[in-house]
Amino acid sequence: MTKTTKQQTVGKSSKKAMESINTRLQLVIKSGKYTLGYKTTLKSLRQGKAKLVILANNSPPLTKSEIEYYAMLAKTGVHYYSGDNVSLGTACGKYFRVGALAIIDPGDSDIIRSVPKEDK
Image 1 (cartoon, rainbow, N blue to C red):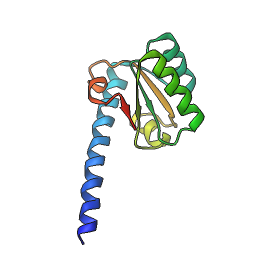
Image 2: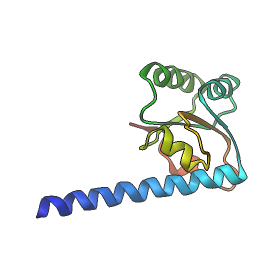
Image 3: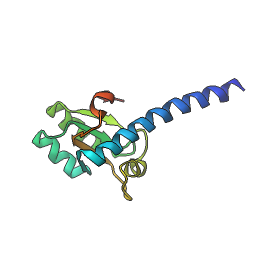
Image 4: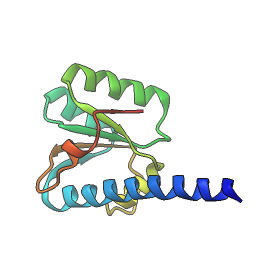
């Protein structure tokens, strides 16, 4: 019985964290500037415009390592979204899958301060 309650509390805390990221992400979509997708994320990293990169947890390892490398060169934070690319697309308010997302201007959101730089 205690095992199920422990799992429920762990689930609730991670769900709350995911909800807060989703609300901040929605605020960025409404008021800020962002790019969706692998290619445009790499472009914004190369140009040095990206402030934060968000990766879905089911993105391919090669894609993940390449974006991490460019982010390290650009001194940009990388956040690993706890959901897959379908839920990341839904969190952005889109009806398609989003594997990578670069935030260029956060707008009214405090997502860059609230999300830790290296979140593994």
